[in-house]
Amino acid sequence: MKQFILILGGLFVLFASCSAQLTGQLAQDASGTVQIQAGLEPNMTALIRSLGSLNAGGVVNTQSGPLLDAAAINKSLGAAPGVKASSLRNTGRDRIDGTVAVSQIGDLLAAGDRRFIRYEAPAGGAPGRLTIHLDRSLGPRILPYISPDAGDYLSALMAPVATGEALSKKEYLELVTSIYGKNIADEIAVSKIRAVISFPGQIQSVKGGGFSGREARFEVSLADLLVLENPLDYEVVWR
Image 1 (cartoon, one colour):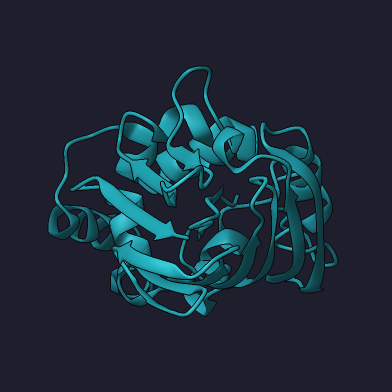
Image 2 (cartoon, rainbow, N blue to C red):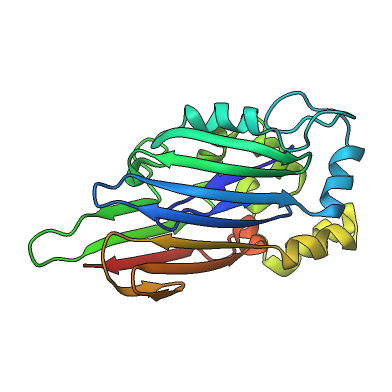
């Protein structure tokens, strides 16, 4: 029981009730790498243990196995569009650390012709541009690339990114509270995904974040990603 969405260039990682830190590098040829450090929060860890044992999909709830299974995640991501290799490892039962290599950022987790990342290399006098658009219609298409059980897990958490249901963030957190309790809802509400991405030139502008020199910085609320009440749109322009 785990879910995990990657987006690089803004490459973001999404775990259900998980805080994550990403450090990425994007090359001019649209390849890149991202270092990921992520872990489950205490109440979500307890919930996973209480829901029984899963033997696939990135989580194994046993006395000895990891709650976040880096090997299973590597296998799923390694077969996903745009991913060259995934080298994550467990640093604890509920934590992972490692690197994901991206072959082409524009192909990353692309669902057929539905691409949520657009990449334009600098050409002539035109700057380089990376844009990301994520909405509820794309979530169910992307999740199967992460893990066969990712959609089922997020559906169990009633997350609109998986169900497509038109809930506001307030309504979603109230629903989680009514089913799983206030502690779980509070963890989701305060969890953040933070990313620092280095670009192959001086950044001119950033939408949805900040920048300094060649580094773009982003912070996104986990609840915003799970609910997608409003589409998430990001853009980086560089020369």
